[in-house]
Length: 186
Image 1: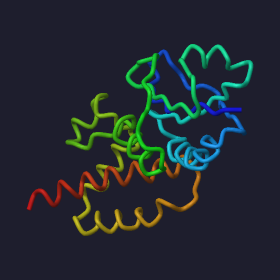
Image 2: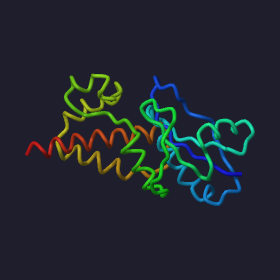
Image 3: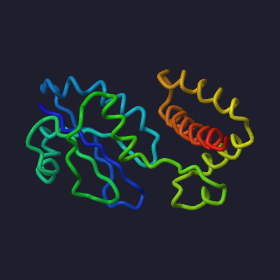
Image 4: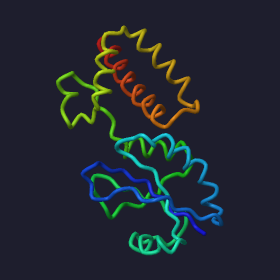
C-alpha cells in the first residue's frame, strides 16, 4: 500500500471539502512521515481554516480520486487554498518543523490583531472568542503579556485535546501580536 498525503486548507464556502483518511502500510517513506503527519493533524484538528488528511490510493473506493488528482508516487503531498480545487503540489521539506512552518505561514488563516473595530470585520479572520480574548489582554501590561506568552510557550508541546491545542496557538498568536504592539510603542 502507498500513502497519499493531502494538506488541505478550506473555508466553509469552498467547493472542496476534506477527504477521508487514506493510508498504505507498506510504503517506507509513508511510514516514516506518518508520526509527524499525525502530530501536524492533531495540531490543526480544531482549526477552522486547515484540515490535515491522508488518502489510501490502493483502496478501490479511492482509486478514481487519486487518478483525478494525478497521484503517481508516494507519498504525494498536495494543498488546496482559496477555493483552488485542483490543488498544488507541496515540494518543501518533510520534517515536522518544515511542514508546520508551511502550514502556519501559507494555509493557516490567523486572526489579524488590530483595533477593536478592525477585528470585528470578517476579513480579520477573528472569531468572537479571539476578539474577546484580545480585548481582555489589551488591558494587561507588557510584562503581564510576556508572562502569558512564556506560560503558554511552556505548554505548547504538552498533550491536550486538539481544540485546546488550537486555542493555545491562537492565544499565542494574539499575545505575540499585542506584545509587539506594546514594545513598538516605546
